[in-house]
Amino acid sequence: MLEAAEVTKSYGEVRALNGFSLTVDAGEIVGLVGHNGAGKSTFVEIVSGLIRPDAGTVTIGGRDPARARSDVGVCPQHISLYRPVTVREHLRLFGGLAGLRRAALRQEIDRLVTALRLGEFCDRPVGVLSGGQQRRAQAAVALIHRPVLLLMDEPTAGADPETRQALLEVIRDRAGEGAAVVYTTHYLPELTELDATLAVARAGRVIARGTSVELLDKLPGEVRVTFADEKEVCVSTDDPTGTLVDLLARADRPVTAVDVRKPSLDDLYRSLAVDDD
Amino acid sequence: MTDALLRTGVLIKHNIVLRLRDPGQLISYMVVPMVLMLVFKPLYVKALDGSTLEAVTGPLVMFSVFALAIVGNSILLEREWRTWDRLRVTRATRTELLLGKTVPVFVALVLQQLVLLLYGCLIIGLPVPGSLLYIALAIMVWGFTLLAIGSALATVVRSRGDLHLATDLGSIIVSSLGGAVVPVSLMPSWAVPVAHFSPGYWGLTMIQSAVRGDVGETLRCAWVCLAIGAVFGVFAVHRLSRGWGRSRLL
Ligand SMILES: Nc1ncnc2c1ncn2[C@@H]1O[C@H](COP(=O)(O)OP(=O)(O)OP(=O)(O)O)[C@@H](O)[C@H]1O
Ligand SMILES: [Mg+2]
Image (cartoon, rainbow over all chains, first blue to last red; front, side, top):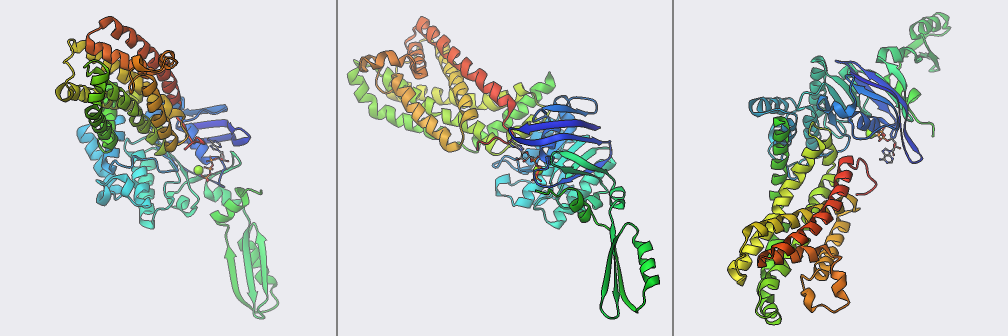
């Protein structure tokens, strides 16, 4: 659905993207993670057709981003809504621009209002809404025309757990219906909930790509054994179970506690994405 | 084609809603010149052999230039709210976006001038113009010129403060140099040649000629106004279609 190869974009001295490559299939959710300034939003801006890359290619269903705009739904990182306009009017505007009319438009709006729980503030101007309510409105606008490629740039930043849950559910549903999703976040447990594959970005390029199981497999886990005299042995290992068996077999004192820690997404993130400088 | 029309319609409606929710500027730019016309009428009538033409068209042109702020604001807000980029990601083409944005503002500009002319005829005693066609032409052409200048301005200013500084100072300079405060015939001699460099001069002369029924002069000024509008318009369209992304400005 989305193919980006060796995309480069510089702003003066700053290399926002430096050979950024990413492929996303229909029905796939890709969790795009990486440190602040890794280039995630710049990538989203290029795929939405808002800015042109200096080099490299991006195609959406085989087409140039500028020609595929009707297929793309973008939820920008920063709130971009008309302050004096109500949420419902936003949905009518963007639904209308996507070609939805009358009954079809109403139906789509009703669905989103229910799914994202917009009901209580749907007819209030965006300017008076709380941050999380604005987030929900912002996401709804991206979803109104049932795009086949969804670009969600930190859609849950500042959202409460319920909002987060509602949004993740909608995104899972859309992927289930065949939409390709690029989902950026700094909150890694969301990616497990979305059953997303991972793309870890660092300094303008994707440095690791795969399912979380595949990527975590390459990381060492940790085995900790506590003895009766309160001494502890802690080993970092690729094979936690084997190491534990081995440690217990060789123990010369009574063991009071064992702890096996598998690598978490946080460990993965720290090992890959964190910028040294 | 019909899709394009429907989308343009959706955008125009949306922008009318935005205009209607922020009507203060337009209303004050209509009410204040009405008051000025009343106050200055005796002065102008005395200085200009009983003619009310300057008393009506002077404040009209001056406050139509002030209305650049309305044009500018309508575009600047799209930058502030980051909504312009959001629109650029939709199916709507560049032309549709620009039409949707500018048509309601254009209508507001034309409406302002119409109301002020009507007020001039009914309250100030401006003779009813012979040819409504040429009046309509003059108002539309001047509206277009203002629209183009205002849009261009909004694409380059760095902040709302800048925009208002530009439109406030610009309006006063453009309209006073153009003869909207003191008629060009009464200006000091050094200022007369300078007047021709002010768009306000061409707008004012065009509207005054149209009121007097001087077709030749109306058309001559209309061409100049259209040319000025075209230059600013091309620049504004170019700048708007690129969008701002994360500009350092604002
Ligand atoms: N228009 C611009 N002008 C100048 N620099 C820019 C511009 N856009 C992006 N950058 C720079 O490019 C780099 C990548 O920015 P980007 O917003 O893509 O990061 P990100 O991965 O989305 O970060 P975050 O997690 O903080 O949202 C940053 O150093 C940023 O300052
Ligand atoms: Mg970002």
